Length: 213
Image (tube, rainbow, N blue to C red):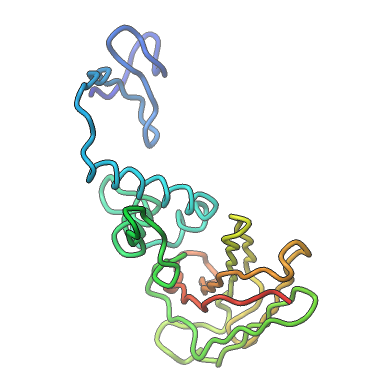
C-alpha cells in the first residue's frame, strides 16, 4: 500500500489494473488488488463472519453516538471500531451454532464520566417511559449540566429510537414518548450522560426490557 502525497492526477478511487485507489482517514492511498483465494472458510471463520455481520448491522444506527463516546481512539482503531470489537467479544453468545446478542452486556457508550445513581425506568400509558435518578453532581467529575440521553431498541421491529439531551443531571428525571407502533411491544432500554462540552460520556447502563403501554 502506498500513500499518495503529490501527483499530476492527485488521488483516485476505484480499480485501475492491478491496483485500487481509495481515501482512508483523509489520506489518498493505493493498494494492490487482493488475490482471489480458493480456500473454503472453516466453521470458526464462518461463525466469526456471522458475529461481525450481526454486530455491525445492530450498531449501525448508533455510529454517530459511538464515534463521540466510545472509549478513546487508539492508533488505527476508531471509536466505532472499538465498539464493534467490544460487542463481538463481550456481548455475543452462540446458541445452536448461531450468534446472538446479549443485550444486558451491550454498551451504547463507554467512558469515564460519572454515571447514574439509582436509575429507574417506568412505563406509563400513551407510550411514555419515565426515568428517574438521584442527583449525584458532587460525585467525581459529575456536573449539574451533564445531559441525559435515552436509547430504545425494539427487537421485533429491529429499530432504534434515540433521544438526546432530554434532561440535565440535576433535574433527576426525564420522560420520552414512543410512537404508537411501539405500544404493546417489548423494548430494550439504555441511558447515558454526556458532558456539556460533548467530550465525555459515562458507561451506558442497561435498564432491561419494558413493555410499552
